[in-house]
Amino acid sequence: MAKKFAARVTKKERKTVDLSDKIKRDLYKLADESLLEDARLLELNIKDIVVKDQVRTKFNDASIKELAANIKTNGLIQPLVVHEENGKYVLICGERRFRAMSTLTEMKTCPCFVLEDKSPQELMAIQFSENSSREALHYIDKADGILNYQKATKASERKITAALGISKSEVHRSLLIAKMSKKIKEAAKAHNIEKYVLLEFDALEAGTEKTNIARKIYKGEITKRAQLKRVINAGSKVKKRAAPRKKPVLPAGFSANAFLKAMETQSKDMDAETAKALKTLVEKTKQAVEN
Image 1 (spheres, rainbow, N blue to C red):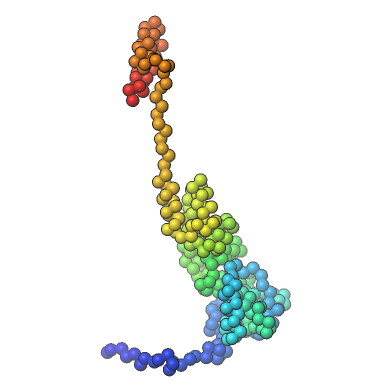
Image 2 (tube, rainbow, N blue to C red; image 1 turned 90 degrees about the vertical axis):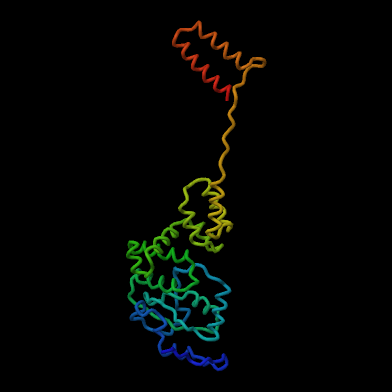
């Protein structure tokens, strides 16, 4: 039986959906229920929210302004996630939203999922999962977040994979990136360098070539994997020329053959052992002269 499709509807005839009404009816469906289990939804004063270290470290001012304008028009669609600690509300997820709201003088409160009695490891897992699900999170921030989680939990790569819900290969690559120098990680953010540039650069043997490539990466001259390969291939093709063989220099007016005859004549008056050594030297000298 052929499948039936609904009749085509023009743009003017399409029905709009009131998202704000849907959100009010079921806010918890917008978040990961397993991560926010037992969380309370409260309206908190923005000034009472404390911001500590976050997974995300790179923010775009233009996108923050755009988000602020959107929040001003439509309100905050996705609540923040905070953790109650000693009477304070510490921000766990939503720093971009928090920064945007902080620029709106008329906005005093916002909805928040409030967590209680969570361990630092649990909070890190929640923070990482929420932030990494957003495309704007830079891979450097993601890598640093995984390394921080490993340091806090002493977990193996396999356990990190299970806890954070990402592949083992991604965990391994992220840990390699996170352990690179601060300078190269800052360059990766500043110049939007592909992560495989860093991984392949890190695998190079230490030496002059790697040092020169590092300078190019710092300046943003290498941002793509293909560019790095071209630089590496160009370097491998440059070989030092062999130094030309120098012919023995003889006194002016003294030919090579005359020199050899003189050496052979001298060997007649020498003992057998010395004469043998001189003969060997003469033979080698003849070869050098002929070549």
